[in-house]
Amino acid sequence: MARILLLENPHASADEVFEHAGHEVIRVKGALQGQDLIDALDGVDMLGIRSKTNVTAEVIEACPQLQVIGCYCIGTNQVDLAAASKAGIAVFNAPYSNTRSVVELALAEMIALTRHLPERSHDMHKKRWIKSASGSHEVRGKTLGIVGYGSIGTQLSVLAEALGMRVVFYDIAEKLAIGNAKRVRSLDELLAQADIVSIHIDGRPSNRGFFGRPEVQQMKKGSILLNLARGFIVDVDAVVERLEDGSLAGAGFDVFPHEPNANGEEFDSPLTRFPNVILTPHIGGSTLEAQESIGYFVAGKMLTYWRKGATELSVNIPNIDSSPGEKSLYRIAWIHHNAPGALAMVNQAFADSGANIDSQMLATEGEIGYMTTDISSEIPDGVLESLEQSDLNIRLRVLKRGD
Image (cartoon, rainbow, N blue to C red):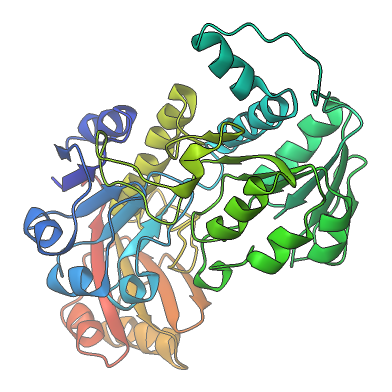
C-alpha cells in the first residue's frame, strides 16, 4: 500500500482513484514549503500538488523515498525537474484537461472588455444608470493576436473565428495554422495588427519577462491585453503606464508576479485601481469540469506508474507506455544515467544467471534513460544487486504482478 499526500485541494476524483486501488490518501488544504513540506513527506510515496507548492532540489534530496510527483495543473515550473530526474522521481501533469476552461475565460474577458461590461456593472452596483454605446464594440471583425499556439492557443483560435474574429498567432515553434488563422513571423508583426493580444506561453524560465516594456509599448492604441499564462511573463508596470494614459482600452489578468499562498490572504497589485481591468485569482482552469478531469487524469498517471512502471506523458522521465505482458511475473523498472552499455549490462546480467527475458523496452532523453525488463520467472540472485551497484543506477524498482 502506498501513501499519497495531496496538497492545495485537488478535486476529490483523485482520492477516488487512489482509494479504489487500496492506497492511503492524506490531504492538506493549502500549500507547503521548505521544511514544512519535508516534514509532511515523511513516509510518503507519492505527492500531488497544484501551482503554489515549490518542490525544490532541497526537498527532493531530503525525501529519498518519494517516487512520483503529480502536478494537478498544466505547469510544472514549481518542481525542480532536473533534481527530480536525478533522483529517479517521475513527474506528471495535466497538459490538456483544463484547456477549454482557460479558453472560455479568455473569450469571456475579451467580450466583457470590448463591451465595457466591468465599468457598466460597477456603475449599476453604485446605483448609477449610464446607458451608452460610446466605446463599446463587437468582437466580430476584430483581430485577435495569440501569443503561443499550443493546446490553449489553438482552441482559442477556433472559437474566436466562430465569433467572426480574424486570428493571427506567433509561436517560436513551427505550428500548423487551424482554420483561417494566419501565422506571423515575429511578435512585432502580431502587435502591429492585434486589437486584442492573448498570451498563452508556458512557464519555462526563459519566458520570464517575455512580454516586457518594449512589447507593451508596441501594442496598438485602444487594444486589449490578456494574460492567462504566467504572472512573470508580463511587465505589469508597463501595462499600468498605458492604462494610466488611456492608450490601452483594458486588460485581463488571471496570473500575477506575486500571488497569495492561500484563500483569504491579502492581494495587492497596481492593477486594482483600474475599472477597465478584469482581475481573477488564478482561476483559468478552475471549473468543476476541468478539476474533476484533472483529478482523474493525474491520479491515473501516478497510479499507473506506481503499479506498472508506465511513464507515458511524464514530463521528465523518458516515455514508455506499455504494460507488462500477461505472462510476466515481474517488471524490473530501471531509471539510469544515459550512457553506452546500459542495455548490454542488463542483458548480460540476466544471461549469466540463465534467466529468459519476456520483453524489454528502453527509452532515453538527454542525460536520463529508462528501461523496463519483464520476466515470467523468479528474479535470479545477483541481478538486482549488480544493477543497484552500477555507476549508471539512479533508481531501481521491482514490480510484481498483482501488487
